[in-house]
Length: 188
Image (cartoon, rainbow, N blue to C red; front, side):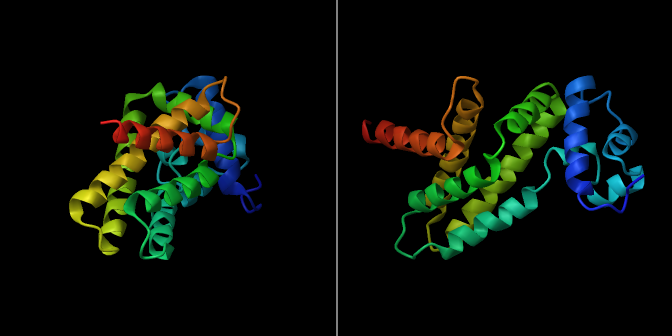
């Protein structure tokens, strides 16, 4: 097995997703993923704590990137505009492969534990964004509302983007979703 070959992490991610789609999440074992990726199970565990984490890889990095983006924004930028910049960055990271994103979401949607894990990861990102906004001096209520708004916009836009009839890139869908929310809020 080519366990020392470069790219093991990406091969494991691809192998896992393929197997989850073919067999289902519960029926796929770590050994199956490792074998398909051409590595050992031990190599799998060097990269991932368990097979669920293959689907949620990068969450900690994303939280750090969110915080970095917030810190780099000019001090006069409104909380909602900061959230818009974060959404643009998230779209760039998450929106480069629609087919993979659709497959990942299908696997998560088919498993209650994975749906719960997805919500926990989203909540952690929302909390990280809220904290970053508060460190900028945004009051607690506004920081929470802005961060929760960002999460809601992401979920709605990501679902729209994953639709087979949607041809625009994720960034454009997110921007339109946020713009529609602004119009909706202004109409009240």
